[in-house]
Image 1 (cartoon, rainbow, N blue to C red):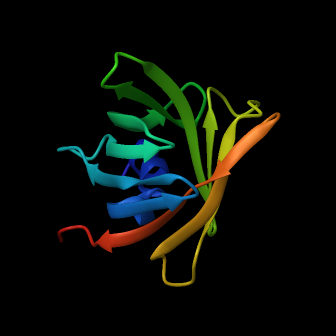
Image 2 (spheres, rainbow, N blue to C red):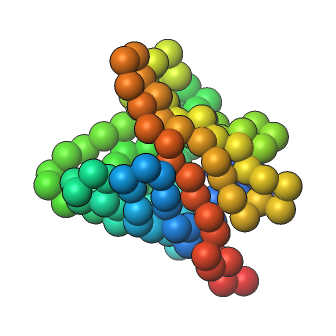
Length: 138
């Protein structure tokens, strides 16, 4: 397995279908490997305070930076960029780049079936938790 695959495979705990919850929020996220395994793909369907977010995100290894970078494509035409990192039981997702004050930080429980965390940015944020509802197909 090459360095690209090794780095990207660190996100394996995300693979599967998750129920998303938080104050005023509900929905699902499904992570799956793209054929060939070079990208992790997230399908998003959320309602947050009556605002619907649907889209698809492609997460891959960016060789120049050595980071797991993503592009989210929303149903309303938005294109957003993120950086993912999973170290131990802590998942961090930065909006834009790792120096961004806008980020999600969440921790997986011991069995990996729940991630409890929050999106945060200067002057705001909200809780966003994930509970696994379907294991990935093996």
